Length: 116
Image (tube, rainbow, N blue to C red; front, side, top):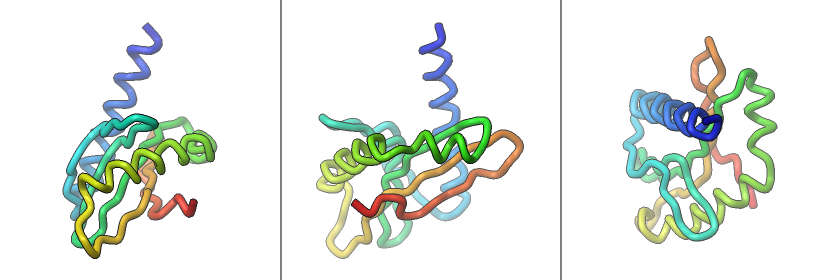
C-alpha cells in the first residue's frame, strides 16, 4: 500500500511541476520517459532549450535537495543522454533541471543541476 501511495504522490508532484512549467512558457514533451538505465520525470522545451526535469517533493527544501543525490542525477543523466536522441534538435541547449515541491511554497525550479 505504501508503494501505491508513494506512486500517487509522485504523479501528483509531476503534474504540479508540469503546470508550473507551462505557466512559465515551457511545453511538456513527455512525462515519465523511460529508457534502459534510467527515467526522466518530465521532458520539456522552451525555445531552443530542451530540459530533462527531475521532480522531488519533500517536507522541506533541504530534504528535497538531499533526495537528489549523485546516484539519482547520474541515472537521470544517462536517461537524458539516450532521450536527447529522440527530442533534441540541432542547435538546442540541452540540460538537466530539478523542481522541488515543498508544502505551502511555490515550486522551486533549479536550472542545469548536472555538470557531469
